[in-house]
Amino acid sequence: MMGKQMVIPVEGRRRRAAEAAARLVDDGARLGLGSGRTAGLFVEALAARVAASGMRVTCVATSERTERLARGHGLPVVAPETLPALDLAVDGADEVDGALDLVKGRGGALVRERIVARAAARFLVVVDDEKRVTRLGRGPIPVEIVGFGSSWTLAALRDLGAADLLRDVGGTPVRTDNGNLLAGLELPADDRRLATAAGKRAFAAAVAALPGVVDHGLFLDMADAVLVGAEDGSVTTLHRAVGR
Ligand code: A5P
Image (cartoon, rainbow, N blue to C red):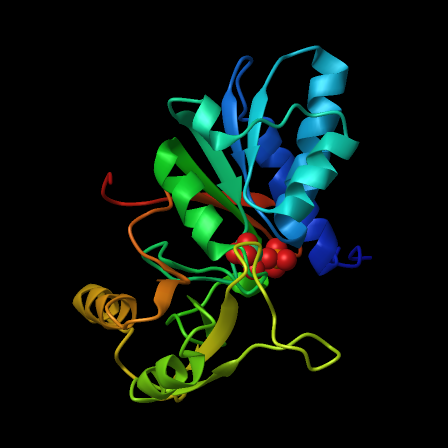
């Protein structure tokens, strides 16, 4: 009789990818810790490895929430300004396309996430297989905007797609750790602007150029590798074709 195919729930897929990433951390590493559920699972896996092995790491966190989580698990967290650079940053993503370009930031931490990822010699992304898309923009692209003139900035974003402030469950506009607002920029399902490398760059540049925009969630040419947890329990590592 054929055994029933094992199907791992989404959280388990993320956890396996996070555990695989934790195994890639070297003793003495200066690490950037991402934000969100999957990045949180990486923090837990890292803390378990550090506790079991006695290895030492120094961490920088991309959000106040991650900082609390890491400290709660006994990981040392320092201010980014105290380190010249990072060896490795590990973070989740909302969407990953075939070129390993990403949408990030639905958790509201995209500004610090980009700063930390850029400061790291390697940027690893951990996701479950449901995050893989044929074209970025399946969901809203987060855009961090300053509060001053936000209705004008939103109007300018609406020239690029449907845009509105992201709100919490109570309907209050989300404030980032930087005290800014978060907009979501949505593209129609048949939109082709994010279908090519040149299109993605042009679109990202158009969003970034708007007055009032602090940063957006299109992380292009940044991920060195993506660890994908699948429903059969496997973890696949995808490597970016060209070095950054
Ligand atoms: C946080 O600002 C984001 O960039 C997260 O990395 C992204 O939203 C993925 O989060 P989850 O792992 O919670 O899906």
